[in-house]
Each structure stands twice: as structure tokens, then as C-alpha cells.
Image (tube, rainbow, N blue to C red; front, side, top):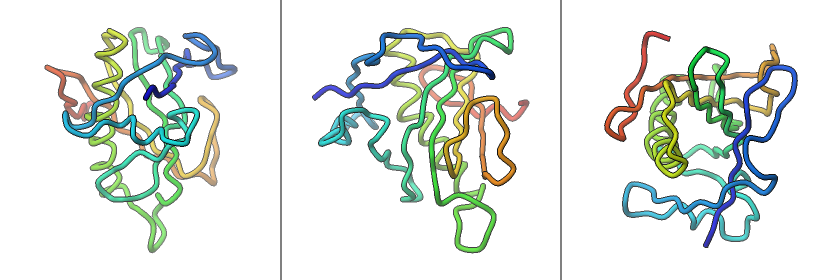
Length: 160
């Protein structure tokens, strides 16, 4: 089974595709045992499939952006996680950070290896609703974490 996923150049004012319209064809291996391609059953694109995370919350990939604006390549994985927030009963930042590290390790590492990219940083973001890159939405909750990739491992970059 093949999953489709696309990535785009990050721009605040507009978005431009970095690859063909239908995206790159990928095989995803999750934790070297579970193939993420299973998630694509019945779904024409990987972005529509829910991605498993440790908290069990529903998370789906919104887009992947290649951002050279910081002066080096940053690879941004933007996810929609409608249950995050600071209100009672929502998934808070403390739990979301575990999910973001998991997403970096299981998705970003495989993506980087498959596309033979050498990003300076990998940024994983969760948002409770879709937001255009570079735009603000005061009513939205967004969590971000930046990672360095070292020996196919995501290492939290607390300096960002």
C-alpha cells in the first residue's frame, strides 16, 4: 500500500508546493515493527488518516513545510489535534510534548531519511484547528517543539 504526502515551501503570505501536486509516494515504518501504511486504508491521502500518539488523542497531519526563512532548512510538521488546550478536560502541554516527541521520532525521522533531507531543525506543532502558516489566530491553541536530528534520533532543542 502506498501513502501520499506532500510538503510545501513555508511562506507567510502564500504556499507553494515543493513537490508534484499528488505528493511523494512513501512507505512508512513505525517503530520498526508497525507499518503506518495501515493508517491509509480507505484514505486517499496520508494527511486524512489519524496518527497514533501516546495520549490516544486524535491527531492528523495537516501539512509538511520546508522553511528556509531562518537561514537554514527547518522541516515543519503541522498537525491538527482538536483536543489540546488549557481548559479542564483538554490535553495540556505536558501531555502534548510526549506526543510531539513521538511524532518526531516515528514520522519526521522516516520522512527525512526517505527524502534525504538534512534539516537544521525539525519543528512539530499541534493546533486545535487549522491555521494558515504565518497567520495568527487568538482563539486557537498551538503547541510547538523543536528538535535536532542526531543519529536518527529526535533530540529536544530547548534553545529555541
